[in-house]
Image (tube, rainbow, N blue to C red; front, side, top):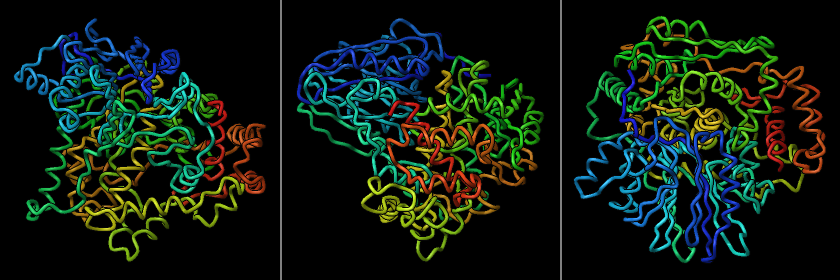
Length: 607
């Protein structure tokens, strides 16, 4: 059964926004209210706006449990002189609460938000290191005017930033979504040329701190940003696990690693059952989500609600893996919902899915997760998902070449980049060309950092810090929160990630990738799920563009707004439209869809 908590316990999945005047003036409270109002989907159950001095905060709340009146946000502690807006879930908050009470702190609510606030009062800017969970937050000090922003280690919860002119002065605005910042007004909406280069090269990922818009940035994961009373800003990165071998584990056998991984994942799954509402699982039928289901069953969960989605085959591309998800559901006796989506339902949902994206996300999975989240939200408010395992345990095809590669950078670029820098002039109009090869420079900079033993370690560190955060993690957060659904990702428990980072590369690459995880999984789930060919979360109608989907992409790329913006050379677009399924990236992405999705997103958000 789920772990029942006291009835006024507060887990807050939500959206928040704020403004900090850098020149000491009064904030634009109306702009903060507009930003907050856009996030009703993330927090449909309540709202609040607060302002004092040079700061204004807004909050939208999603009730995962019954909320007491004392748990309203923005939460103000007059005794400490602190105010907080918080989005996330702190899994170890009961332990922290007891520790803080022993240190003399008194509590007026029973949830994790006040625990975070008092943790800051007790431990200052180092408090995020004590938090186990996912979070983005802003804390304001009444007496000094200092403002602190922070984001969790793996960037599971988002935080976007914009420098604007507000009431005649300079201000920093922040919000849980990029569209919320646009609603506040005054944001530079020009396309960022360096970000555009990353989007077209780095698997449509724009690494933090950039976004595709020049005037919007995002706080990187594992970062604390302090805005001082004089308006100056400083950052501190509080977590960077070493991708090196731990001498204390030098004598471990392969079975020792398997047992350690399984125990760490068992704890991660257990932590994410903290709730007084039912917790379901998104069950794709792959090893990762199946293992989550198996571990929950092992812990005594009965009648667990599981959910799978599939699509009709298009162009010879299979669109479901129900035979595997059904096998897992039957083995563990789950209350299983299987959702088969016909193409005529995908097309109408496409624009809504794009509208839900805080940034353009080219993965076909985004639409699948959007439709799945819509269905799941009718049954439960919280789900666990298997996202992240491939990046943490080396499950993708581009990882094996990295082990022992003579040139790490060239090998990574060959297997991962969508197109080389030399092709940019063929794709983009001259005014949108970046000054340098942004993606290669990014990878070179990351690979040059110490703390990674091999080329594979460097690739896994890069993907965990960047690609994981700004592709699958963001996709899950955006699509689930569009329906007020909270997604928890046990494979991104930071202690599990630290363990995986230390694991010998050959154990991760074994058995076709994720070897150590697959071998550990044999203790829990059927071998048929483990030994199957690697699958994915397919939407064939978007992989193989035809009919109404091709028409939608053509409309976006030939719309007046697209022509006025003039990002892409007409000759290049025409060539892709003439043979829409011929040009694929090394990761089997459709290049026409990549261009079309970007224009659809820009037009959807009025940019």
